[in-house]
View 1 (cartoon, rainbow, N blue to C red):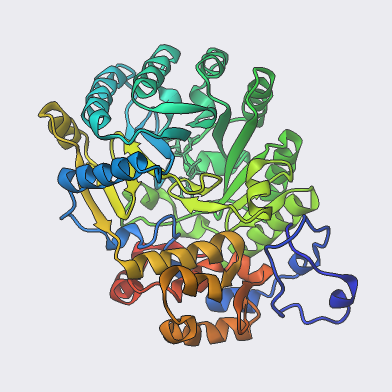
View 2 (view 1 turned 90 degrees about the vertical axis):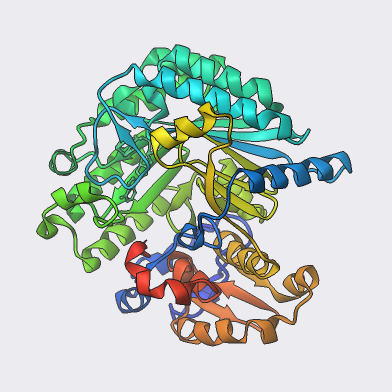
Length: 493
Ligand SMILES: C[S@@+](CC[C@H](N)C(=O)[O-])C[C@H]1O[C@@H](n2cnc3c(N)ncnc32)[C@H](O)[C@@H]1O
Ligand code: SF4
């Protein structure tokens, strides 16, 4: 954990009082998580955006297209020529999976066929050709392949995709190059090839190792298989391995999840993403396969989360925020300690101050003040690139007000502190006057000890780090319009 608290603060201290949750070195003090106040969690947990972007994607519209992306890239190129260029991150989306996990809320195309990838990669090549003349002359410091399951590609197809991207982007020597993989369709050959072509981080889905849960979610994946790939990844030289798990899945019990957590500790990945199951059957009809009775109720969700928090923290993991944990020597934990942690579409990340270029179906670019998302359906995506047009079809251009609020939300979510004077200097506002309504909305959360509303800074408490989404929502100017559609969002805990 990264909090500072001395023994005298412990003694008789109200566990609800706000304490800095973001500064200093990892703390050994885990007291605060022993007995989470369920009444407070319940009071503030609801539905809300995950703030992988601000404004959230629910606020974007379809008036953004290729011309906007061209203009944003042209501006970035001009800045680079003036010596003010930002480095790039690149995201490539591989949408395919061979079978459907019933819980899945990702953008996936399920197909047992393995011959579709070449046609897809042909189109990504075309998209890269369309993008290349507009890319700024700056180094690329990070690349991430997500999905779906990029491990659906064969080793040769992975090399093909990496080579195509490498021809258009200039990777820095220390670039972080990561991909998401499904252990059920990964091979040792994949791992060797990935290392050879430069990948250094691997993220795999674990979800839950209990057989009853796996059967309920249609995902048969043994602990041994997952542990074996982590071991092999380390052997061939991956410098970091991440595993994803989910609490709140059908059939999960405290006992079964405790066993899964012990198995996670046996593997000891560098990072753990522990997502709360997002049950959004109106968006993902496959989730209707779950019998509502088999889903843990909200009280059980809290207990599962608390147990995971205690188990992982007790075993030396730092709680990065919301749903991420990392070993203290992992870059994510270091970034949190030195205040450079960021949040983007991949969740918490170390990619500070980069512009993001997305390629492939549904992928998102964030260049300067523009969010632009690609086509979300395969045929229109193919149609656009085949006719020589960038496939951007929706997004948002941020106003100065959006950027201000985005900065405040990032500070809350990543570093747990909002320095009012710094925000005032950067954005030319009077913080207390500008955010009078937000500060008022924060009062009940402050009364419950989630945040300290000091005269100079807002400081998120340890408890507040679990409920950081409701805190961020107080600064979300788009939310009132979205409130009627709150069921579009997932549960905040
Ligand atoms: C693209 S997948 C990871 C790679 C690979 N497809 C796999 O499943 O092994 C991204 C992650 O999102 C998480 N996820 C998917 N659907 C979710 C949901 N409904 N609620 C919470 N997490 C979810 C899972 O933990 C999953 O590992
Ligand atoms: S969880 Fe991963 S493997 Fe399962 S359907 Fe979703 S993207 Fe595919």
